[in-house]
Length: 456
Image 1: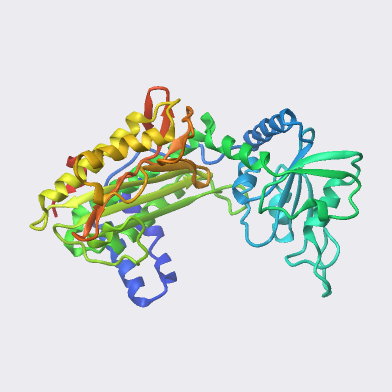
Image 2: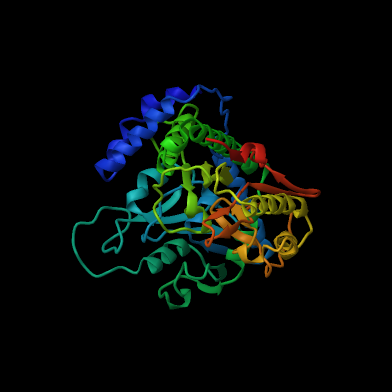
């Protein structure tokens, strides 16, 4: 897509911003984007979501694990687990959802009525719904009278168990379901297992399939061109722009670039699991690993400047940052040393991420570079977290995580260094896949000084 074209479909969106001042700034950002040199990128050819058949195969793999564990069924809760097994991407709130997966046979779903059209057009067919939460009245119909609060978990379990006989051993997830032994009038005796289900599903999510990796590559291709756009925006407008304008213009560009290729019809199950987020912060705000402030600062010569994309398509993708430095009189030898060492740490993590290596050994090896360079006081966190369908997930490249790396696990790649005292910090991040010979960096934005150190 030619980058100038994205302006046409975004100028009206800024009216939704909360104040006239922010709206004016956003309009200014898009006007500045239109003034940038034109640049074309290859088409995003997909895939843009996983098909129902992938989720059906994944559920079958989980059923195999239930049978091996001698469990008759599992009651699955939590948006991450339910999306992973069904691909519904239903929005979750306080309204409970329970997915019953039998070791043999089709799944059953108990869900709120506001999603009955969404679930009714998806592949899980054995469903029961309640009107809303807290609920009173019968199931599977609208209700109009007030009354006592229903025990929805008991209602769900009685429906799941109807027609069953004998004794069943069922897996549950702690915190997702009340105590089954307190549910009365069940037709069967249920013995709960509280450990296996959550552990098994987490381990499944930790290892990505070829189809999941293909989807992540599409998201990361968009992520790379957003970082490229942001860099060009900063080079074009320099000290005449704010970090807020960089964020606004790049977010608009990314969303419109994706919409050019993403099939959308306004109905459920297309364009699902999509997040196109971008953040820029300049100057002293880069000195904090997890800042809690709003970013709206003028870009200045000598600033460290962080550009950060987080892109997911069909629920897959990840984060990617570049720690940039603008030339200027305030740049000191410490800036060079911290950037060089932190970049070396980023590459060292990739080198150490071989299948069969303990996570804590990778973490220790990466942190050692900062210690050996005498930069200990600038270290604030572990090098990386697991990057799955839900973002941050286990395992972690942390000193206390003894998990053994397996091929196709995916991680962030962000061993940052920060100096609040000096008012700057650096934090690259990449999306990295574990292989037998080391980590594969799946995004392509350069990590070089030639790309990251700029003049305005």
